[in-house]
Structure formats: C-alpha cells, structure tokens
Length: 155
Image 1 (cartoon, rainbow, N blue to C red):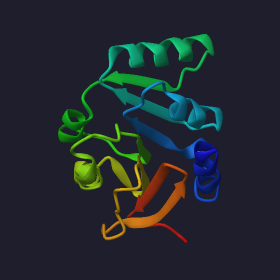
Image 2: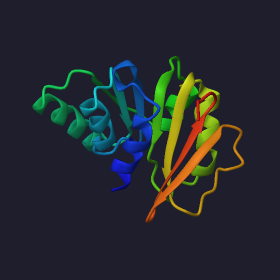
Image 3: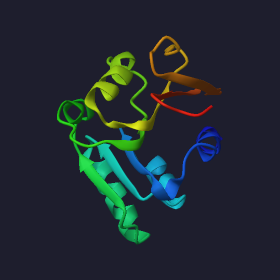
Image 4: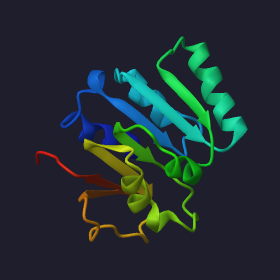
C-alpha cells in the first residue's frame, strides 16, 4: 500500500520515460523494478549486500530488463565520490541506521539530486525533516513514512 501511494504521488510530477533514478539501500530492488515497470529511462540500484545486488541482477536478467545498473557499494562511500546527478533519488535505509537523520544533507551535498530532481527517504515516524531547507512534503502510511525533498518543484 505504501509503495503504491508513493508512485501515485510521483505520477503527478514525473515523466518516467525521461527519468533517471538512483535507488539507495536498494535491498531486493522492488522500488527499482517498480520504476522500470513504469518506464524509467534508467535506474541505478545501490546496496552493500552482495546477496541483494546479485538478486537484483538475476531478477533483471530473468525479466530481460536492460536499463538497471546494479552497484555493490556502501552508500556513504558513494555519496563522497558521486559524479553524476539523477532526476529521482530514493533511499530506504535500515530504520536503525545511526546516520539516517543526516542522509538528506549528505545526498544534496553530493550533487546526486539534479536541479529539478526529487529526493525521497523512507523512514520511521521518529524522524522529522520538515525543517530541512529542501523539504517538500511528508506522507505516512502506517509505520512507513516518506519524506520528499526538492530544490525546485511546481506544487
């Protein structure tokens, strides 16, 4: 339900066919594959866990998906060496991640979010990001919370 709601929100703001997506802490790749299924031009899935990245690669192969690039890396190391930007950056970090509150700042400082891009973080309700300079909106679905950030967005 939460993921469907996320994409229902994005449907109003995103042309998927023109969209490049970065999925941080990709896990099983469910969000990455959802972007692909909606026609995203390219998706980069990042996770440190080898079993996760292999699962995403195998799933992509199984469904003949050729616009997913899978990267096995520590997200925080990737943020330090980023050299490209994306239209959408999605992050679903472990809820117990100690650095979760700093993630929006780190993502924006890295340059990964394009000028007209959107950053979305999934997080537990204990975290509030409304005071962040790029805060756009927050949505809660049971225990799942999404906070959206954007530098430039038409409301």
